[in-house]
Amino acid sequence: MFLIQLTLGGPTSTIIQHNMSDLPLTRHPSLPTDMIERFTAGVERDMQGGLRFRYVVEGPIDRIALPVRVASRQTDDLWHHTCFEAFMTAEDHPAYLECNFSPSTAWATYSFSRFRTGMTTIVPLAPPHITLKVEHDRLVLEARVHLGDFTARSLRIGLTTVIEDKAGKLSYWALRHPLAKPEFHHRGGFILRLAAPSVRI
Image (cartoon, rainbow, N blue to C red; front, side, top):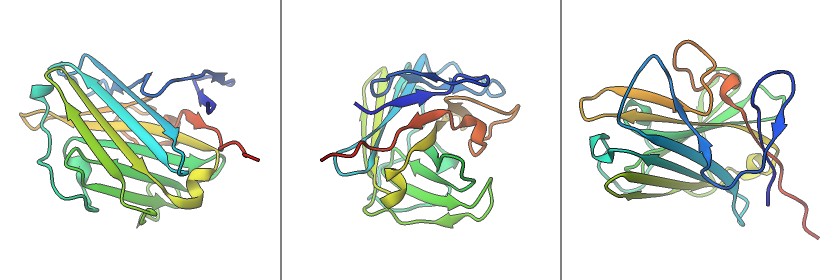
């Protein structure tokens, strides 16, 4: 089991063991929606040294606008529509990565040298593998991605999502919203700590 630490606020941190997909994402209060009853997400390391993300949405799923499935490919501006995302950085380092996982199976991965600065498209070791399962009241998206040596470090992670309804309105979901407006790039939202993998002998 990997140690996951959730920073709950204040000068000290609380260490909590988590199973996959049991961390609640909350909606930014500036953009209300009644489509979602419960939203959770999680991340773990896989046996190949990559990361597996899982997002679970519960509620009237038929009211969510889902992009049409396409062949898996790197695509910009996915966040204009329903898109599941992750932001991650090594401890005490200004640079960070952004991953976008669309229900269409399109994806994007970027690096930034610091807050919204020096954006560069990066190529994972292999295209992210995205799966989507939709039931009448539940949606599950899983994404696996391997970002090389970066993912072998101790990481701080922000799990986030943009949800578009069928009227074209967007709502923004995250583990924490640090600002008065939606802002996924702010390090105040990177509150999940994922320890470096244990050394196996």
